[in-house]
Amino acid sequence: MLTVEGLRSRYGRIEVLHGIDLQVDSGEIVTVVGANGAGKTTLLKCLSGTQPVSDGRIVFRGDNLGAVPAHARLKRGLAQSPEGRQIFTNLSVEENLRLGAFLYTDDRVDRDMADAFAMFPILKDKRHLPAGGLSGGQQQMLAIARALMGRPSCLLLDEPSMGLAPLLVAQIFEVIGDLKRRDVTVLLVEQNAFGALKIADRGYVMETGRVTMSGPAAELIADPRIREAYLGL
Amino acid sequence: MDALLQFIFSGVTVGAVYALVALGFTIIYNASDVVNFAQGEFVMLGGMITVFAFEAGMPLPLAAVLAVLATAAIGVALNKLAIEPARGAPVVTLIIITIGASILIRGAAQLVFDKQLHRFPAFSGDDPIRILGATILPQSLWVIVGALVVFVGLWLFFTRTLTGKAVLATANNRVAAQLVGINTAWVMTLSFGLSAAIGALAGVLVTPITLVSYDVGVALALKGFAAAMLGGMGNPKGALAGGLLLGLLEALTAGYLSSQYKDAVAFIVILGVLFAMPQGLFGKSATERV
Image (tube, each protein chain N blue to C red):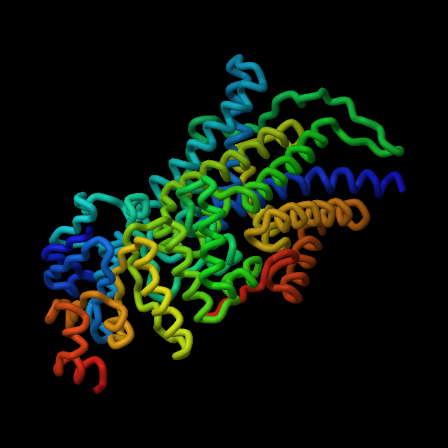
């Protein structure tokens, strides 16, 4: 579904991605784990088109995304729930969700919103409140729900567990694991390597702008180097 | 009593013009957090283009429509040529660009048109209408109705339409707006076009009363900005209330005190309000958790 070949990206003169190769197949949950500053977020930003690519190719469902601007990528089925939530703080919870389906005006919008409320009941209780007043966990739920409103075939999730209480982290990972049943392919970027690898099919490990290891998630969890470096075991 | 009513009539008329200018500020501010100081020039262009098209033999309604459309095109050009290339620059830089643009447009208007005062006939004649001993010009009613129609239109646009919410979303978080599929460059183009069109409409409506020349925009932009701040920047309700309040303050001061003090009193009241309520009368206080 998603193929990345030799992807390079830079901030000014400093290159932060030194040729990333990565593959996500339809129906998979793939995770990219790594420490702070490894380039995980930059990678996702390149995929969603909000960060310029200096070299390499991104192929999504057979099309090269190189010339496709960020706002046109969702229409092709690629959605991103960005780092730091990035919800519309001045609008209500419901308006945030409605804007998630900005591209659509059909009946399915209402059904998708009902789905989102079923997935996160707390959002339903707060639907008319400004999204800026939600707690961090609620904002994260809103960010994921908003991305799903765009009817993605592939969802890019950036650090959904960041800054959340342990109980919420478990709930968020459970929801991500359930996305498989909705036919949504997931590329999950996480510092919480253990939580991410537990729900993922395959994983990549990134260090300073390069992929250093990859393989089935179960193997990565069992790998002694990973256990020591990322899982604290 | 008659005098009071007379002052109120003139205050509401002037206030409606300020409100229209303030509403123009509202749209661009909502889309980009930028205060567009070329907004007054849009008003001037609306008046000037109508005058010259009318004098060239065009029927007045057609000249007015042409003026609104041409000014909207100039607003779009301002965005494409000056704001969009500076994307990513801090808001203050963009605001300074709009000040530059206002000087440029004023200079160009001096060359393309002239430096004289102009007017075209009022839409419904110049015979004042008598109400309870006071009089009001039919053109004043046009101005007041125009401001109300634009206000209701904008209010519906921002609260009831998906496009209006896309404008608000773009201002709040440009990256997130792109991620939900909003073409933010298009939103900016729309905002500048719409804003310019509203400014031009104000110019078309008010020119038969106040006349127009190349430099009327400066004072109008200042008063419109003050009105928008008074009401709460970014809120159409605030723009309308702020504009009317400012107009009334000026008219009543001019009537009962002295017309020399009208600007001073107006600005003292605005300062007082902003000291007590920094968000303006209708502004929302920002609540955000991070």
